[in-house]
Amino acid sequence: MYFSNLAMRKYLLLLLVILAGCSTSVERDGQNLKVIDVPLRSSNHEIRMSSFVDSISYIPLETKDECLIGFVDKIVATNDYYYVVDKQKTSSVLCFDKLGKFVRKIGERGVAPGQYVEITDVNVYKDRVYLWDCSMGKLFVYSANGHLEQEVKEDYWATTFYVLDDSWVAFCSGYTTNKAYLKDNSYPNLLFVNINTGQTSPDLYYDSRICTTGIVGSDFNFISNGNLVLSLNDTVYQALSPSILKRKYAMRFGEELEKTQKEYVERLKTEKIDAYQGDKLMKEIPCMYMFLETPSYSFLRYSWRDYYYVGIINHKESDTYMEAVGYKQNAVVNDMDDMAVFIPLATYKNAVYSCISPGRFIESKAFGKQVELDDNPIIVKFELK
Image (cartoon, rainbow, N blue to C red):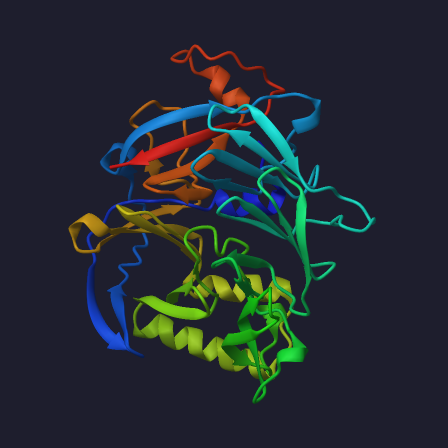
């Protein structure tokens, strides 16, 4: 497969499926916050892919020396291109057209001026590609043809980011301590930055006493329309231009589990909990780690114990909520071509995108496209109903 070990571990824990839920809307801070009561089933429940997917298409990515892909850490889909981010193996950002033909490489890795050392996250806004290197504290901005246009130095440690407009960018730290922004004994999980003027606006503060090594965070924020979720927080947020944080959904997992979550937060304020302990203890708390949005459906991924869930919000039916669940397995059944696995990596318009290895493609006799085992991965496009 073409995923890093971390990404593979997390993505294999994904599922999606059906179970009616209910939701209500309330006004909070001048925003229409929708409250959703989450079923949180503890038994497997599958859903057929054909119930929400209209069609599946496959785009083999061109394979040649200058565009070899080791791992797929992220896909960014635009109107004309696919940007494939390989952080682990080649540390590169590769651009392909919608037919899968290689177009160009974005940026250069190295220690010379204008070069990045490692890729933390990548975003595309209009015709510009933005690359964040957290190790350098630098945001690189490239033109459509791959030339470096701007290099911005930041003092905020962030794991993901999202470009809001030509000036404003939202950075998410994921419970990483940023001492320069300490305020009232709290650190911000979110920082809005105007990369042209240097103006900043922090948000989503957490208590500085919290032992952050005991928190399992998410590396998958901001992959869809500026949406983000945080561990130990039951709200789905959206970052908007210029520096607005919208609270979209409040997910209710039940009083007992909400109590368990609060007790763990209090424990983190007084105890030193390492990553191993944190991973074990947080299994007893529902943890949201990704939110993807399209005009027809939104998908919320979360886990609890050894169950992995995808909540489906049906926008065509007044945001009716459905829930898929599987115990250490994928609960989405491909009843359309028996080849693609629904493990979405990105959204664009009313489609969800993922990828598969050439090996899985070759195994299917239903397609005439020629691929080899050592070819680049294949983009999968799920057009939604």
